[in-house]
Amino acid sequence: MGFYIGNRWQDKVKALWPVNEKYPTSGLFGLADENAQNYLQAMGVAARYAWIHRIVITELIRKELMAIFKHDNSQLIVDISHNIILPEHGMNIHHKGATPANNGEIVLIPGSMGDYSYVALGKGNPDWLWSCSHGAGRAERRQSMRSKKVVSDKVDLPWQCITLKEERLREEAPAAYKPITPVIEAQENAGLIQPVVKLKPWITFKA
Image 1: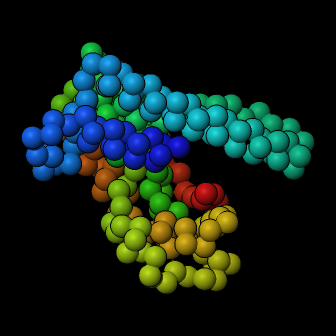
Image 2 (image 1 turned 180 degrees about the vertical axis):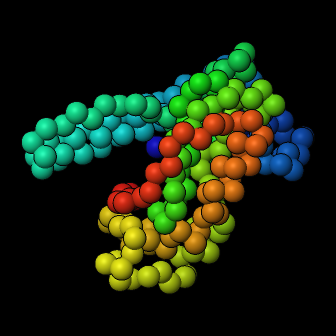
């Protein structure tokens, strides 16, 4: 849904652009007044749609945990949307490739299927717009990974990936991402976050 809304608004903003003006070389178009508010509302719909999906998936997992272990004491600790504009600190801050890291706020920074992920506390660094990275960052684009081979014997892997689309194994392979540890250390040294817990992947679900 987010992809559809993004494409629709790209078309809309180009139609609103002055006829005699060249498109911005950056490819970024500005919106103001009612058009800006309408876009934020549309993006909010997509964000709520994603939130409902996360809740449903979580409840399905909790249901299975109950069936297997006969009890479930799991609790929602944190829920964070990535790639979203949020009204913060008197601004609309666009967290693209980033996630909010306000002072004392829990932050989730995933690595990859074959690397660690981190739970951290934000330090609210205003020089970085009270944000931090929302992951290790890609080393290679999805398109370039599609033609590459990955280990097919899943039994020998230290992690498992459950997916209905085999191309996800290539697109999201550990080699497609940067090592997470230097990314975490750089942000810690810059005063963006304080790492709290390091998590090792076990099972990954890819849509």
